[in-house]
Structure formats: C-alpha cells, structure tokens
Amino acid sequence: MTPSPYARPIALKRTSMADVSVLDVLLHDEPIGTLTRVGGDRVLFAFMDAYVADENRPVLGLGFKDQLGELITAFRPTRTRLMPFFSNLLPEGHMRTYLAARAGVKPVREFFLLWVLGMDLPGAMTVRPADGEAWLPDDHGTADEGARDDDRHNVLRFSLAGVQLKFSAIHEAGSGLTIPAKGIGGSWIIKLPSREFAGVPENEFSMMTLARLIGMDVPAMRLVDLDTIRNLPYDIGMLKGQALAIERFDRLPGGGAVHMEDFAQVFGVYPEEKYENASARSIGRVLGVEGCEGDIAEFIRRLTFNALIGNADMHLKNWSLMYPDRRHAALAPAYDFVSTIAYIPDDKSAVKFSRTKRFTEYSEDELSHLAAGARLPQKLVLDTARETVALFHQYWHAEKANLPLAAGVVQAVEAHLKTIPIAS
Image 1 (cartoon, rainbow, N blue to C red):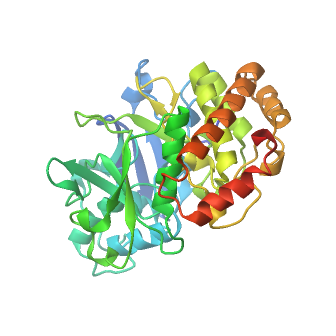
Image 2: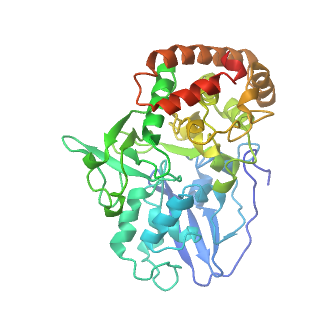
Image 3: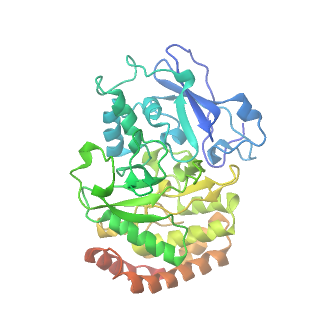
C-alpha cells in the first residue's frame, strides 16, 4: 500500500468480535463506513464496499488518499481512542470533561463520546448507532451511571470540536438565537465569554472584522448579549459579558452541509499534537497541490495578518479545508482570529512559519523560504504579504477606535507591531 502524503497509513489486523458495538459513519447522509468496538476496547474503522467501488465518491479526508490519489482502505485498530481523523471531531480539554460528565461518559472513551455527539459534527459527516442499537448501560464506561438520557441529548448542544465553550444555535425570525432542544441542525455557532480572560468575544469580533476589511473570507458574525440567547443550559448563568455568534460556513441555507476537515485531520495527528509535527509551510504545500492560486493568496493573507495581531494560537486545528463540490479541496473561511498576546505575552507562533516560530523573524526572507519549501510562487507570496501589511495599517489606524477593543488590547498590538520585520 502506497503511503498517503498527508497521514500515516496503517494496516488492518483481524481480531475477535466479542462484545461488538458498531457505529455507522455517514457522509452527506449516505453510509460510507463503520467504527466497530470489540473486546479490550479496541476500535476498527472500515470503509463500506460501495464507497470503495464508487469512482465518484465524495472525499472524506485527504489523509485517506495515498500518493497516487487512490483510496487507502486498510487501518490498524486503536485502543480506547479513535484514529486521529475521528478523534479530532471531538472536543478537547475542559470542554471534553464538561461534556463527558453531562453525557455520563468517561472522557477517554472516545468511541462512546462520538456515539453521543455524532449527530452534529463539523462538516457533512454524521455518526449513528448501526441498526438503531441502544445505548449500552452495562459497558459504556460512564462517569455517572445515573446520567439521564435527556442529558445525553442535551450534550449535543455543545457538540462542536474545540476547547472553547461553544455550541450550535438556530437563528429564528423574530426570536433571535435559539439553542435547539437536542442540539441538531444549528446554523450558527455561539462562543461564550472566557472565565479567565476578559473580552475574548470582543477581541475575536474585532480581529475578524479587520480581516474582512482587508479582503479575507470571513463568515457573518455578531456580538450578542447572553440573556438574548434562548435555551442556554442552566449552568451557564455565571458567565458575564457578550457572546460571539458566527454563522456556520459548513451549513447550507436549505439545510444541507458542506464537508470540511481541519489540518490536524489532514496530517493524521491527534488534537494534543496540533502544535507539533507540521508547519505553515506544510499547510502551504498541501494548498499548493490541492487548492488554487486564490487559496494560496488567502493563506498568506491570514498567516501575515495573524503574525501582525500577535495570534500565538494559530495551530493546525485553526486551519481547515472544505469540499464545496464534494471532491475537490478549497481553503475554508477564516475563524479563531484572536490577539492572544493581549492576554499571554508570547513571541512565538503556535507552529513554525518555515524555519522559525518567532514573530520577530517573520520577514520577507522567511516567506521566501516558505514559498520555496512549499513550492508556491514566490512573487505571489511576497506581493500578497506586502499588500496585507499595507491594508492592515490602513484599517487598523482607521478602525481601532471604533472596534469593541479594550485599551490594553490596542496597546499590546501596537507594541507588537514594532517588533515584526515585515510590518515596517
């Protein structure tokens, strides 16, 4: 089997089928594979024969393609955890602990966590029990055996991947934003205020607004008061401030979905490795092969913009691909643009640009090195970066006083800009 250029291929091993539980994996509402849990908490993924045989099959992820573009069909079983592609669909950190407790699932038991959350995942993929199999009350590793079924339904409200407290909502005419009773079908994402840092939603709204003015692909968004959101869970009441509402770019007006995957899925790494094993140059290399010239220019705009605002958390999961025609990849719209240096001083990016993580070394020479290593047109890369810097200065000076930014954020960004070689 020829290895995939993006993810590590693994070989399937036969195992006993005692204590079997099966989840169907659907893409665009069509079954394409199964996740099977067997004795010893081992999980195996397999594509269905019809999907393998379909020459016009929709793409599940780039990591399932080998170097010749053929579908990889053999996978090694995992234990307790799911393989990285599926693991990255699940929440991380405190968010995972919170949701697992609500669902009565141990956080490490990823098969069962996906079982609970599988009807409202990012993109066009859903996961459901095969043949309507009931929840396993005697062998699902619950943290609270008394967890109620309605809690497992309600946990879907928070089913989107990531570490921030966020969930799906529906925009109802005349009623504002409403959290669905079972969390399925929301067309907006609500990102709640941070308990640790003041003004994070306002920070993100401001930076995403600047990005849109500069010409980047940014979804519709707005700041909303918490008390205007209907059906917030009872234990959210202690949060203060505004939330950020962002329209889901993986949902279509008619109720359909556009498939997407983040770059941790593309590279086949687990969420905790999102700061490792890849670089901006690696992302650029994928876009150079799979995307178009417009994707490359947009990538450089975002990379440069986040260096200028001091976003030290642009890790692999903050870059995604979409499949608008179900078969060809394009860079997904922007998300999670926050000036993190306003809260945690840091002189390093989340991942390397090409040779360095240091913002103080983000220069035209570093971008030239990135372009060469990623096999991107150097002129396009440098011209796009220069244009982004010029537009950033123009809109930053014109809009910083009009945006809902704390004075400390403005001061942190302006001090940071003086240290960035490309900003001068």
